[in-house]
Image (cartoon, rainbow, N blue to C red):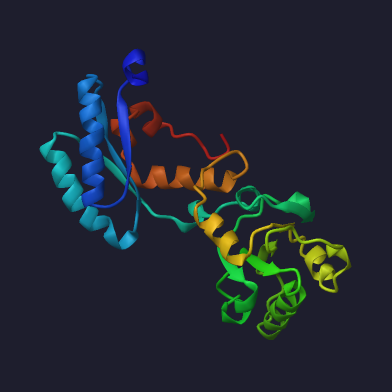
Length: 247
């Protein structure tokens, strides 16, 4: 309706795949045809690298039959799917306890307090430690021990959720014997009334978006579009003079 009111052409963006992607395209395109809104082409988003050729072949073939150009295929990038800690805090209804100024930290993985030893801190970074108040310091001590053994100076932890059992953790977190480590690395800490399982479920349902608090995502998205989308078909003047990331 909006595109028709504005007399605008449309670039359709659909999530990667084959069968589901074609089904969604077929449904969406019928709506635009009904309103007589021209579709310039299609961009397929979040496609696994190893699936790109297959998706290009089958979806591209289907689009060709519909006389629609495939403008590009954007590969799945895990970093774009990483939420910031503030988004997680909202999802678990967390209460801020320490280092509030680091709530914009990106979170790239979840580490339950009982499984610290199973993680590889040489290759895993920006982890979210989900742990009860009783076990938070023992988990931190394990992290310190593993980091020291591997010669890792920076903390692999980007945020800590102290879980509850129907209520928020109480007491002075700053008084714990692991508080020095938390403050040294400026790790933000929140508490939630949810238990570990409930917290992980809430986090798994987060729909991650690009916004003003995630500038690194905006820059990465610009890079991906430049590399994988045929801008000459959308806006020739933009393709000839693309904006710089700082713009």
